[in-house]
Image (cartoon, rainbow, N blue to C red):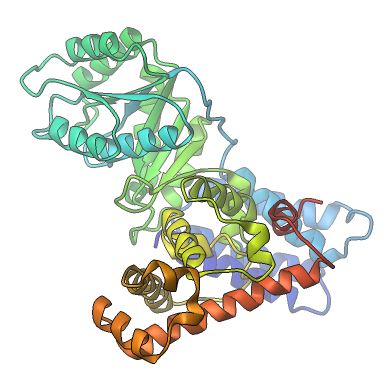
Length: 443
């Protein structure tokens, strides 16, 4: 995945510092060299790397640690802060009336990202409409319309019309009841003058609230010129970086777009409409360094649980945790996104988990859900009724082995004991609100 190698290199550099008995000038200089090497290998702009290095070095040697903080923790904190600054300023996303104009070169993933963005605002409870104004690429409207149909978002366009201005004008008139309107413009292989003029006209016509540039993570430092040209034309105020699940280095695109000071709004990784993640510099760097991102994890959990049938939390904490409850939890986790992405939000430190483990775990969760689909209501509500003959029937009905069914039941008993432990640890009844506060570090 993009930046996985960078994350590993950064964690190794910090681990080396943490293992030193004395943090002096030599230790700081060694750390800075390790950070330089890691960032340059990830294709981060040389000028930005040198600026970051100088800032870390001067702050680490000149600033006094905060009260109660050791020198080692002081230096680690400076590295974290400077890496966050490297990512550019945080960009606000308004959850209200707005029109977003999408810009980018052909092949950047702009059409797919438009649908993902529509889904993001839809999940926030807003009425969304999409306008397909890409008249250059064959099949662009059909692709966008299909993606929007899957998430039940209206898509306006005309595959027989070549005038993007007319399509946009008509689409705006038909989408007057929408709170968020997203206009997908056409991309080309280069920044031709007619493309630039067209997007200037569409920006004026739509009275766009935001103009967001879609950049392929593999583009590297070439993204800087692309960002500059579009910014000069329509004043780009946000960037979306796509294909973050690829093998490209990614650092070039991340740092190059920071040059226009627009800020990264979202990053995309994956093909489904759910695979778009709000970009927050501090959370991103925290995850890159293995420190987790509990805030984003809690937000995802809340969104997923909002779409899941309500679980009686108090009954669960009294020990009544049925297979039906577990099924709903697995559904919620599935909606939260790829397991690897979810695990990256947990503070795992330097612990590395192989892709094979994620694949096996994800597959096992899916198998558990299939097995539970073959159970009766009585069995889901009272797992103690599942004897040997029922186990064999469930296995045959779900295409699973008897061992897999037993493994599922064992997993359920483990979760049930863990939830009872929550109740004991709280000295009585503990509600979900308190659990979530402890989880997110808020008291």
